[in-house]
Image 1: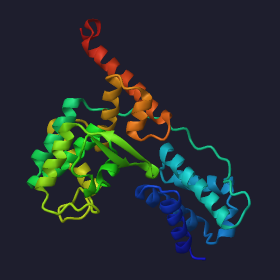
Image 2: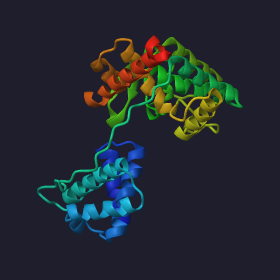
Image 3: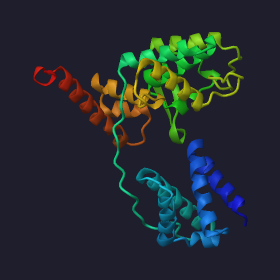
Image 4: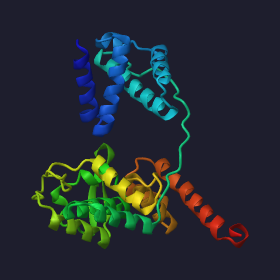
Length: 298
């Protein structure tokens, strides 16, 4: 069997059976491609016999290339998943991969922007755009991230069927899981403004957000527009599109939202993913305290 056939089977397993995102599929296929290049193994029977020692050797090679703890942990997860897949393909009765612990990864806190900064960023991308409809498009995308807590991939996966926006929007998140999110009038108006200005027909089965030539809008273009806007506003590099989603969660929690409701709105599979926002909220309150308390602000 050829390496390309193995990689194609792994790709299809991730994309179809596991329903991983296109970004994750690309990354996991690249990780396994490096493993195959390093080991020279190109059949399911030998790949199925990969053990913990072989995986450690592969990770050591990647560490030598400068891979950090978070990336190493991700590679290990991909490799263990692939070994399990290879064992199933080889017909092994127990496809369980080798038991290994990855490096400890310190989970950093998201850095939210303020509500004013979020709105100003959205306005900034519109003002910076050379073409009016593109400015309206970028503003609508950023307000969806902040106003509805969408991941950027979720916003860009919306089709014309979402129009016109109502009080709620059905979003398809990770793993194909759907959830309903409330839509603020400000967000609805921004999307309607973009739809009215867009020169391309927004058909129900085509992407809602279009690139300059009418194709699907890429994440890179949104990130580029936001980078320009945050520079003009003097905001730090941490003010990314994803930071707007963090801000949505932090501000809701500050306003009294409970963790379970927040979990549903964000589309988190586990409550543990949502609990990080309690730490963010505490960090924000501490920062306010330090700057406002008379004994601290001195």
